[in-house]
Length: 318
Image (cartoon, rainbow, N blue to C red; front, top):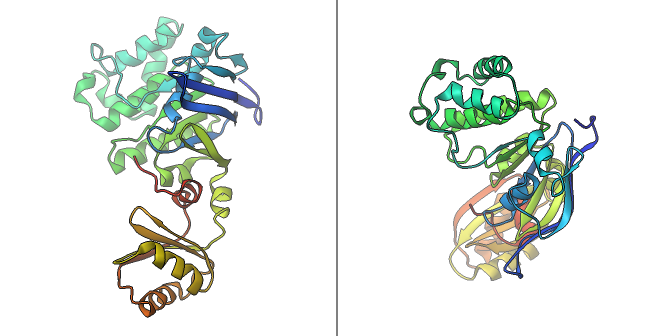
């Protein structure tokens, strides 16, 4: 495994094109350091899953190069497969095996001895809070348990990198919290994790660094805080009103003190403002003076969603 602060994943101009013209991933340049949680964020169709597919040997790139744990993915796919753990968004547990057997046989597949695989399966069940369901049929466990079992299975051979594709999609809040508690513990132990998600709030809370993708390209890459700092505002006001929203957006940018930007996005106006005190009264007064009746109004701090809107001009959609 690479030493701390070394790149465990590196992509150089990595590209996947379908039918000659459709760029699922377009000239992807990025690196992931050993021991960090790195996020690929963006809506469905942004290129996140194709990127992971190329890094895990499942998708053959059209051009470019990628390395995982020092091995060229295209030239040494067998070695790369031995060094990674991957969890897909869909439940791909073996339904002919019970919970314990899914772990045991996965360990055996990756070269563990029978004794070592039994020990690893027993210990992993305890770590992932699944010991009580060890002999249960996988079709009988909850969605949260199934996702934890998928992660446990991917880790049983001690991979250099764990790839997670939308790991909390479809899970209830309690299951999401439980899964991220486990992933947080793995992270503190030095596990490198690359995760795809369209959940900006979740990524903000857990990722050391992240890349925002759309239409196959990376639009921005940095720490969550530095990305939010690029907004240049302290408050984001979201409002709706009857009438010409583009006209109102322009008016608010001109009339509201401290306004940084204002735009109409998906039927609402997003106004970014420096400062926090007295913002809403200023917005309401400016709108009403020009005859606009505000029908809904809220204020929040800038988020990664704000960054995405600034980069793309649209809200993030699943």
